[in-house]
Length: 210
Image 1 (cartoon, rainbow, N blue to C red):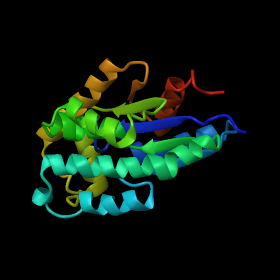
Image 2: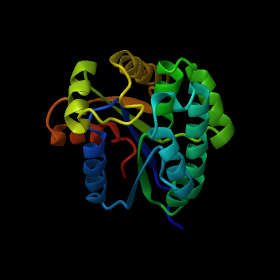
Image 3: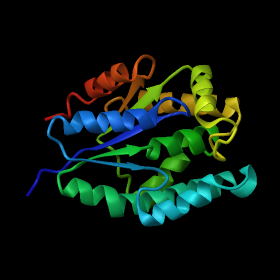
């Protein structure tokens, strides 16, 4: 039987370059002979993708903060059961574009629900299943916002289009998680060329690599 794979989550606010780095990190790990599955949140399984449409489409008032947090938790539970755990059991590495720490930062910190309240939902819905390593890409909030505007124009989704104060709180939430769980969560500077950022991500995974 293959050894269990590793689960890596890639996190960060809007405009930090997660999509670019997700692909680059996958290629880098495959170059080391690893089998790699990439996925995303919300989504990553048929049930979770259905919930993704509920979460990201519609106007800002579509869901209150508690309902939004519950939907994210429900999607994550299905994602773990249907996609992540089966891949890990087959010895594959899984990289997810967002996971629990996004809910902690977005709904817990920026949304005002409290980090521990949102973590409690995860303990119930997903038995507190955690990544082996969480990599949070960081940029100055103003630069990240400028990148997001170039990427999306004026048509961001209902969460990405929230005001700058919200995204500053998201950034603060991510940094709180890194301070609380330094063994699992690492901050990675997203400034510089894509290749430079990928090298930083690999360095942050160095102790997990075969």
